[in-house]
Amino acid sequence: MATEENPVFQIQRVYLKDMSLEQPNSPAILLEQEQPSVDIQLGVEATPVAEGIFEVAVTATVQTKIKDKTVFLVEAKQAGIFEIRNVPQDQMGPIMGIACPQIVYPYLRGNVADLINRAGFPPVHLAEINFQAMYEQQQAQAAGQASPIITQ
Image (cartoon, rainbow, N blue to C red):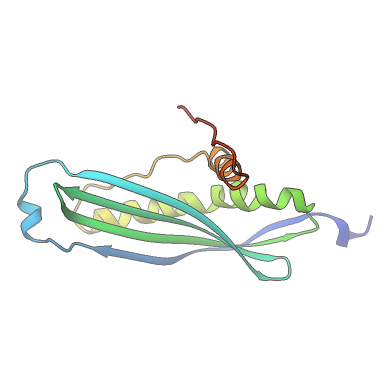
């Protein structure tokens, strides 16, 4: 077997690509006693960088509100550069949509919790994500099928 034919999967780098924090209604909103509502949105994107090199990014948007006023808004993008070669094409989707995000996501969770804590708020810990279920749901939606119901 030639080494060129062996599958290659290597993490080249994991890095914080983008992060922002906004507190548009401070300081007045900080005096409110009401518990804020928390909305968390997650996304995954994969981009080819060079032959056999891919960037996979996981994004999170965390918005807390009291009534209709924003307490804080965090937008973060954690990315990884992966070398992926000699892998069958039908396995590339699951690698990019499941394996790579599972590697990058813990870094995103830590950075988001740290930023919120440094902003003076109790940290918001992003829940563990089942990237396989998320990937399968996206595939079902892309195929025009009804997405499977995911229960926990």
